[in-house]
Structure formats: C-alpha cells, structure tokens
Length: 222
Length: 118
Image 1 (tube, rainbow over the protein chains, first blue to last red):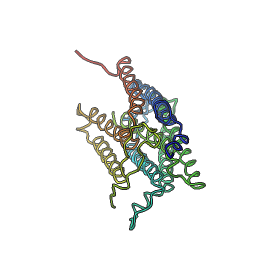
Image 2: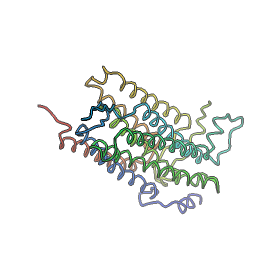
Image 3: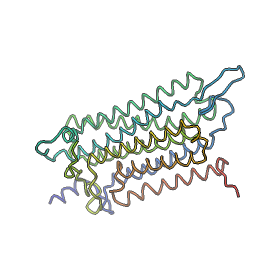
Image 4: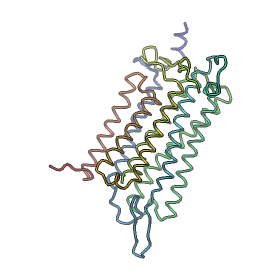
C-alpha cells in the first residue's frame, strides 16, 4: 500500500526512475556542453590578446604605464574555498531533510542535532553562495578599475563571458535556495520533499564542479 | 564529533523509483571528510602556483589538471551521489561530459593551442 502511495506521489518513467531526476541530469548534461563551449573559447583565445592587462604577466602600454598581472589568486582561492564549503552545506541540508522524521537518539551530541536542521544548512549554503558572488563582484570591479573590461582585449571578453555565465548560474542557485528555505520555514521540508531538495542540490553541486574546472584552467594554469 | 552509521541517510530507491538500484548515501561525517579532502587538494594547487620551480616544470599543468579532475570526480561521486545512484544517471552525465571534453580538446587542436610533434 505504501509503495503504491509512494508511486502515486512521484512520477516514474518506464525506466522506473523519477522523471524529474532524469530531467535534472539531462539538464546538467546539456550544461556541460554550454560550459565546454565557453571554456574552449577562453582557451582558444588564451595568450592571443594584443594589448593588456594580461592574466599572469605584466604589461607596459605605450605611455609607459605598468599593469601588473591582473588575476588575484589569493582572493579567488578564498572564493573557491567558500564555494566548496557551500557544496558541503548543501549535501548536509539534503541529509537533514532525509532524516527529518527519524527520532534523535538519546544523548545526541551537538553534531547530531545540527545535522537535523535543514534550515541551518540551507541558509548556510545560500549565504556561502552570496559570499562567492560578493568575491566575484569585488573581482570584476577591481578589474574594471585596473583597466580590464569586456571590450579591452580577447582575455577580457572571454574571461568576463565565462565567469559571468558562471556567476549567473550561482545567482539562480542562491534564489532557488532561498525559495527552499522559505518553504522549509513556512510548512517544513521532510522526507517526502527529498526529491525537490535533491534536484536543487544537484544543480548547486554542478555549479561547484564547473568552478573547480574554471579555477584550474583560468586562474592557475599560466 | 561522533560518527553513527545508523544516521546514514535512508534514501535507497526513494526518488530513483522502485527499480532504481540505488544504495544508501554516506553519513554526515563522511561528507565533512570529503570537504576536508577537497580543501587540502585546493591548498596544494594554490601552493604549487607560488613555487616558480614547479611552475616552470613540464609537470605543472598536467598535475594541476589531475588534481582538478580528482576534485571534480569527488564532488560528483559523493556530493552528487553518482557513485550510489542508478547507472542511467551516470550515463546521462558522463556521456555529455565526454563529448564536451572531446570538443574542447578538438577545438584546441583545430586552433593550434595544442599540437602533437612527431
């Protein structure tokens, strides 16, 4: 009986798999292609800018003005750490939702208790995502002040397009997380809502893995 | 910080469907350990960036790519649960990923950013 009820609540395909989960994986697959096109465009034009500023080397313009390498690795390393930790918070949010109806064991410690708080982890994920966006806003602003815009050179065009698309995805993810948080605060998220949190988590982790690739290919490889 | 296996998330076949063939997800402490591993790899990557001798080495770029691939795989396997989920999800993700990576490599050869010397 419970199996029938479960089947009625979810929407299974002929494969026996939930179609919304199939859809998010198919969407993530298509997103791989999108980011591959953006990353390959960046890599194709890497080192082909005629004028600076350049990512890893100094540049002196005709007026004798010196431009330092523009990428700020310490700041980006910090933002990378923030995004990695947001993925950790997200997976713990999903687990908290899955365990919502499981009674706490007697003498549960603080870690066990906090593991059950889906609102804490959803809020932490959203705040870490917003912190990442703050780092990106700081980076973009400082680049513009240092003379690099989307129109300056090939590096500027491909860099702002690639990281801007990623930032837009993070922004969408943060809005999604705040929506889940609002649902959790109003009616509560429980095991029956596992799928909607799982789908949001898959999207969020995908945004994280894209940044893992961007961090190495754009920032670290010279 | 205790680690109680009984707290592993009971997700088997929840939303993958009755024939999903999923396994139970790891517990919270495993996720924390995975996060620590990701952080350590990131620290190694950034440390390598600041060692001129390493940067000049021909192994610098390949080692960074390997470390990045390891981080990528860890997140996908543990946080996205692909290690525990139905194999059709793996196909849906790895298929386009392989095509995407092949496209990047092909374009880099086409535009002479990569070349093979005989």
